[in-house]
Length: 350
Image (cartoon, rainbow, N blue to C red):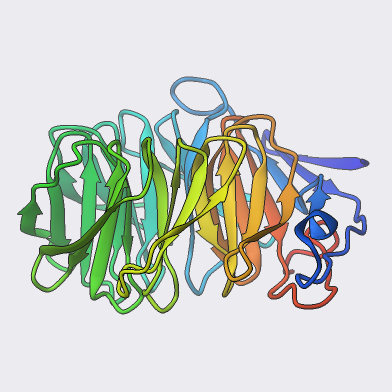
């Protein structure tokens, strides 16, 4: 594969020559339709300009709603904002003093919230990079956070501390909730903001009613630690994945039995890419794509040389990062019902 490297201010931006890997119809048998894409449309090497003077392991990614920024952070304590259109570094945000584990933009995209091993939950002005507020200070590491879709409240959780709910406008804690799982790695909020869910070390998925703060459903979905979760668009299904090498899809509202999508590696991150496609970032450096409706694998995205610890998706673009310190951008088709452009052929937006 031909790689063209553009070096600007110490940043290496890699762009690949376009190749054709057509996606095949989902109506065919799984073995016939699995396609491997071996190069991303854009690759960005994180520079070694943090206080630890090495390229950062990436464990958190967030995409700005209604904007062009990609936020990425990890073990060098720095948040970097990149321009999604041209791959250029826009600004660096410093304030954390330990590994950053979670990033989320506010629904309007004006504010970025971060959290990590130092127990801090910080709010940043996305346009200037200025720290707006210290929203919280947990006594232990904060591994996960989620912001409601109306932008009014936020949930945080992590190691040992109880789950906490905050009012974002005034930064006040609304409620603390004790959870049997004392090491939570994943938090998600349903699209209608009526429910939120958590998962962690004990492998149990739990769902709470947001208004009442009461747990209303739970399932022993995994045999080992849950690393990632997502509500489907309608909120009726909860997708979870983790170290037992299984994606579990649970129709929690109807009480239906969950089904599993087995994977040959630990799953560290997931993203729902359209109505039915699940992307799973794995410990064997591969991103796997599954069709939730047909329960069949539809392809793999290869190129990372370290575990894929973070995924984010918006408007046809999947962004991945992990232990190889490289951000990768994969344009994905909106549908695979018919032959469409592959992730290695489709161009990023100008």
